[in-house]
Structures are given as C-alpha cells and as structure tokens.
Image 1: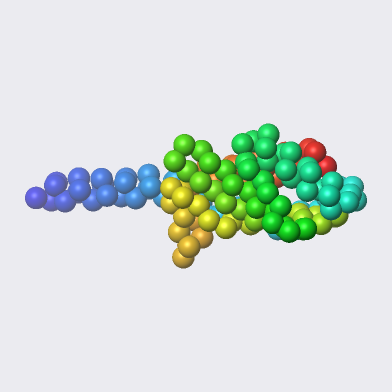
Image 2: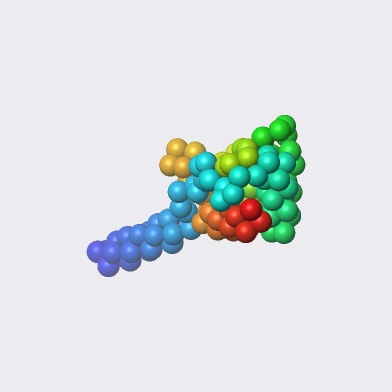
Length: 126
C-alpha cells in the first residue's frame, strides 16, 4: 500500500511540474523607447510591417492605438499596442487555447516568445 501511495504521489508531482513548465508570467512591453524620434505614422508603419512579417494582423483602432491578432493553428493571441513618436507598448488583451490564468497572470510560454519576436521586429524597423 505504501508503495502505491509513493507511486501515485510521484506521478502527481511529475504531472504538476510538467504542466507548470508550460506556463510563464505574461510578458508585456511597457513604454519601449524608440531609438530615433519618428512621426507617429512612421512608428505605426513599423509596427504594422513587423507584425505582418510574423503573421500578426495589425489594425489601427485610433491614432496612437493599434490591435494585433495572431492566429496559429487553434490558438489566438490579441494585444493592444499603444504608440507615439517616441515609444510604444504591447499589452495582453485576450487569448484562446493558451492556458491564460488571470489570477496568476500566467500564459503558455509560446505567447511570450511571440511578443518578444514582435518587439524585436519593431525595433529593427525603427
């Protein structure tokens, strides 16, 4: 009986560790400074171009605010991108099939990679 309890405990612990490894704190980009001063229109063009190169659908909601959507297989990530002539920020809005947990602010680790790739691509264009 003790052996069965140990095995079950070990399996549960392993499952918990495996599931926990797939989640990370949501990565947001707060007020990322632009290297050279540009017009807001130039910053938006860089955001749109960078996003499209990575499969994001970027749409301007109003001047200074854009929304990005990334559809990959059964997954969806939605972000809000605030921008001006000297900076931009990327914030999580919603997702589908990415195991987002609002209480702990965690999400599947792939999401963070997608946001980091978007940030780098924007920087390259600016």
